[in-house]
Amino acid sequence: MIPLSPTFALFVNHLLAQESWARGKLQKHSGQVACIDVQLFSLKLKVTADGMLEAAAEDATAAVTIRLKPADLPLIAQNRERAFSYVKVDGDADFANTISHLSQNLRWEAEEDLSKLFGDVAAVRMVTGAKSLLETVRQTHQNIQENLAEYFLEENPMLVRPAAVDAFGSEVNKLRDDVERLMKRIAKLERS
Image (tube, rainbow, N blue to C red):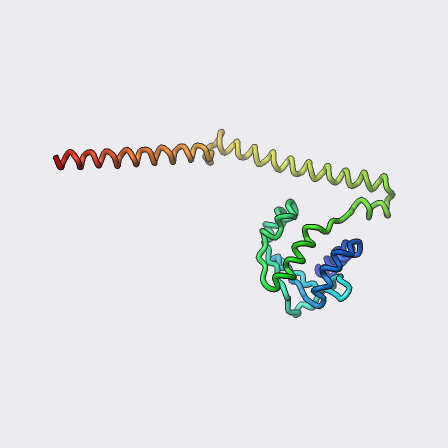
């Protein structure tokens, strides 16, 4: 099994090597360790003096720990801007903010890297094909969700539309108010 921390550090270092501003932000946290705990595995990464990352020892004390659930990984991948809303962060707030900023702004230029291996035309086609495949998967996922919702709402009613719940709630409130008015009238008639 490939150790995850060194492999992840290599990938992030590839991105950092292309972005001096990102290395500058990390240099402020030189020597600090970040732990990314995904329940199934964890990554411990140490910031080096040049603003790059290296795998930290398993027993290293983390300045910041970022905990996330494996079920949230697709949501994080889908919306990187909101990635930190799915995680629980413990430790150094400034270091955590730096990690959050980098996670939102570091981008992999796959086309550029692929062009070095396969040439410009092939790289453009590969990236375009991958984007098309991802869009097809996303659209298929959405279609399946819509079909299941329609099935459980219309054909085999196990779910109720929110509008129907709201209408039912309004009717219950109206009936409660009517019953209270009727009780007051009855009490008034009993007094007279």
